[in-house]
Length: 239
Ligand SMILES: C[S@@+](CC[C@H](N)C(=O)[O-])C[C@H]1O[C@@H](n2cnc3c(N)ncnc32)[C@H](O)[C@@H]1O
Image 1: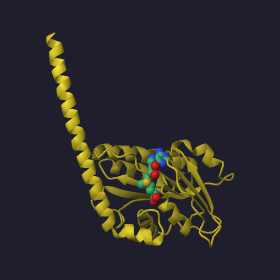
Image 2: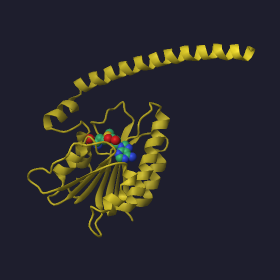
Image 3: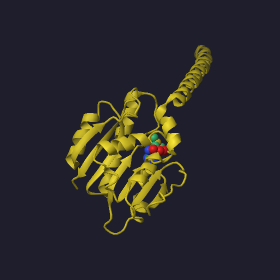
Image 4: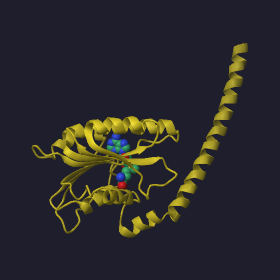
């Protein structure tokens, strides 16, 4: 009986605190989505993306990295873009690639179809699903002995807001992408991946150095300074 009373009280307390927690959470979310909208309105890269027909401001991150780090997009005949939606990195890749190249995009989400720029004949293949499960389908679009020159990944896991957890999740995604590179990347090829910087950065860098000639961490100007987002460019795949 006593136990019953205690637990009833406790349940009452729990449901009250759950309601107030939910309210607090909703209020915080509403505040932060308001802040996000505000920031979007003021952001010059958002304005520039709209003006230039890019699907998101992320386009400028890839444009800057490519420009500063040896124009690897221009040199690529086959590019695979992991986590491509809504598609601004793919738009940039399509612009920079030579005529006759092959651009393969993969995302869990639907992505509006991309068009080859009018002045070039580019084969664009858009796959839907988890990149981890896409290898057999992807291979069917590559010719015998054909591999990717460049693997792009702007993928991000669902973020929790807990820094250490989000860091670990994205590092896991990077390691899975490295396994993926062993299946599809050609010797000498390059790989660009997003991370949320944290304690595992050094281990990732050391691991990548075993498989690539050069590994560099890059923070483009268009990546928000308050974000822990950094890009890892690994060049010269040593298969
Ligand atoms: C930041 S967005 C990419 C933005 C893109 N680079 C652009 O410029 O438009 C990250 C994308 O990664 C995708 N993603 C996350 N995990 C994935 C996975 N395991 N396989 C495929 N796509 C994934 C998400 O669905 C999301 O669309």
